[in-house]
Image (cartoon, rainbow, N blue to C red; front, top):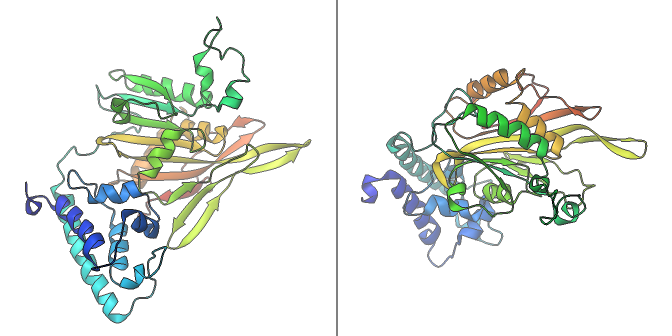
Length: 358
């Protein structure tokens, strides 16, 4: 198949040619371009690959057009997007953006039905005979070793003690199994020990970048304007950082001192769904809080019988026509108990992406 017959490949080749040939004698690597766009190198690579390229979102084409409108973008490292373009540069940006947008529109129209996992009336229901892999965060060795019954030679050994979000895992696993009786639902740890067939199944990731390496790997390969701040120490609070229109905003948990101890009053949780970056006919779903209470809260948002229908309906209505979306919400904790978040209450929602118009 020639590039003229496949607009997606034609777009990928055009993006690659811009990077390699826009300015003779000026070397632009994928790594340097990724730094300018604030995305990962695998993401740049996925847009340029000659076979089955990923389709960049429109706002990334805006970035390409702005970057390659002027050689000033690459005058010094780190490379950057120029905010104010001169008249001739702006004319080139407009022309280049029109060209890339036309290619993207043609590629989107040519995308065959079923190229991404089909939507259903329930976010946790998947087509029959499609494997589902729940990947749970694992306790670090210093904490795991301190627990009883964690020695495989112990007669009372409990393998599940390795997982750090057991409440969330129990809640979600039973719900997913009940909704998908015709599917194989398996549990794996997040230490990057997955098999290739598991990476390409419907991936459900519990927990964040600190203790779930699969979550960190997936986030490295998707285009999401949200970053989870790491917690190098248990005492660190962390937060979710959102980047939009050049502005950074961070949402953090709320803790207070009670009797010399820090008590969690409100966690911050993130729900994310998109096509699986390793297999576009499957999905990846991330349920993640800054603390385990937040992870449980975001899981219950779509499993709790009192709230799941309204929250599911909110997502399907809010993101109609989108296969990629995320929600950051508050998760209230009252006397140690997690209160299921109601996503129909504006005060509970902290951030929704992508921004849609009504």
